[in-house]
Length: 161
Length: 446
Image (tube, rainbow over all chains, first blue to last red; front, side, top):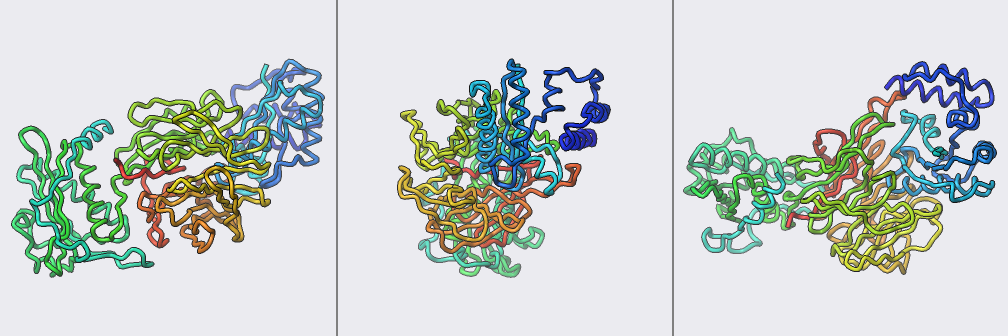
């Protein structure tokens, strides 16, 4: 439990400063979570996408409109995914715990779709992009406070070959 | 266990026409008026049912315990401590000595007998007495296999509840729910089913797939629920007795929030596709699907009125989640919730007179009820998170779940099942082996 928390915290810190020396931060966090991946990040790999592009965007409470910071992240995702066109994408839509289960499933689907539409508008083929909603069932931040909720209201771009 | 219970139920004979003198007029006798607000629980004496052999005596004690627990949990009855009893169960067989029961302030009294025949069949009889009027109010005889004793106890409790309150009971019922365990970011969720008092608990799924929102069919032998089986969130139908699971319909997106129509012939649910959630109906006989809403907002959590004529649902078409009703063909949409806050998860009462809901306001959640036209809103339960009301079949009691907040590290949080009655005063936890959410109350077991 403690290890998980540390790795999430590190991931959040990483996202906040994704342009600057992400490899060091990633290495720091991974030492707490075996198995340790020691080698450097390979360009075009999933780690490269997560560490150097950012795999997730965040939403305001009960909103599915993309914020400016989200659009900036998604622009980088589009550029990277055009460079590495072999990946297929699943966009996960998530909600925080301050809503009811069924409503949040619908809200998560809306958020995933917002991300998908932006990526497709940016030039990615719609056939490459699937969506799935997990509602409030899969939080990454464990606390019951706004800091955690703001991390959990998210759209995550998951790559697969 | 359930199979055996079912067999017992099939053999269960509720006879008893002339043998015991049933109270001549149903209107007389001790009575609780549950249409009032808070009422004083009725003192009732529930001695062990008499058994001649040790085995029969044990069954008689077990049944009395379950009857007393059912009635006590309703908040309407106050079973008297058996140690205060003067007349013995054996002596009761020749009739109550009413002064003995008046002396301990019992207003109602149960007597009875458990017998196991040479064929292994069990016969259980009970009588309900009005102590002040010195009259029998009810009497029934049940036969079953000895394994069926719990159901007999619940049926006796239902008979007493009905005779005293004038309303149907709800004790011979089950609850299906989502059992939860593990940390918040790796929560294992399993379908589970149990009697309404938490007994006969069993898991119906392994936890390999995320499952949510189970609901009973009107026969209580089928469930509809949502599963992420093979990573694809869809609505399924589950046969309780065989464990057979069937994907419901061929839909192009996520299907969720399913409920049976009261006649059991349809499932109404949501389909989310391209960022828009609409309500659909799936006819289980013809396998035809029909779209009922047509709006870019979220339309979900549909629940049909018991007469099948209307549907209440949740929509954010007004800017935030509120409750709406529509005709069962999708026409005549009307907003019914206008209070301050966010309204979700509407569920139509089996009596038709009320709609239960979840409300979110000022950092707190509430379970409440309102009339189908939105009037007379009353909030019954409150918490950091309370969610997902479900009606007992008599429309007098609701189950829901309650979560507690967790620390930064995810500790301290949890989710438990509760019941509360319409007076809002009798909140009780339903004990489950692990955490629980998404309870759904069955109809009376047929």
